[in-house]
Length: 325
Image (cartoon, one colour):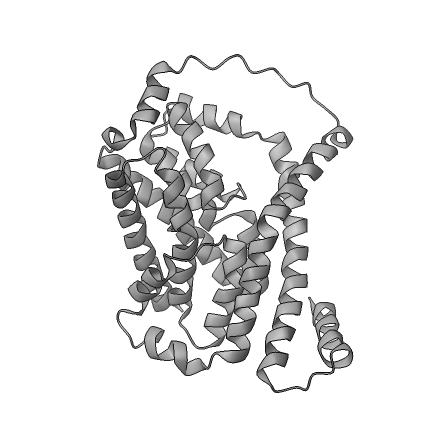
């Protein structure tokens, strides 16, 4: 499907740069060029298509729908599914999380969104299909949605509202009813295109640096890190490989698009798929920058409980993946 991309990479590496096949630099550079072109192309197409969807299905409508209706527990699933169609990294999800809390949506439902949004989105799905195939992608999406749903239900049962910061409590107390939203006139598609294009360019500007950094790291790992390096610590025979991978990922920060090339290399180096995906989920869903943003709305105790529940669910997901694959 992307043979022309590999041809470009081969031309640049062998013909233009004059590198020889079989050395680490050649493998690393070829991997970097091939994946950069392929992933950025996928990003553009998927973000543009989802921009069209979002222009006809605004976030406010979803928020009102969740807050005004009773779904007997299904609201956690709906919030997780909404997280799937929002192309946000963990830090970008926090402002919307604040809007959910302010809108009166239960805290557990907002957590379900906050967990799923950075893990599973249309960008990650498109890249997953290109890197690992449809079967693995379906299981990944299902596990990500279940991760957010189960985490939201557990966190709601713990009744953690008292651990929101004073700032949030003041916002909730003093919040007036939302002003009547200006009913946007129905516009033809051609009039929506400038807004859609603006959103596409803004998202690409935000995502592209992480993608390039992630691909560069993946390229270095692909070319220079021997298979035994990861095999010794994250092999299927190591019972603690999944928790170890999850813990190692916490200091890192990336979105799903940026870390997927690294996951691809981990798998190619012989790391079990579940262990590699647990690593990816932890990088995306347990990032330190996200914790810094959450301090605005959560006390440290609530952050600790949130991270603990998500970590446990990620580890379980990793083990399940390893058993299936």
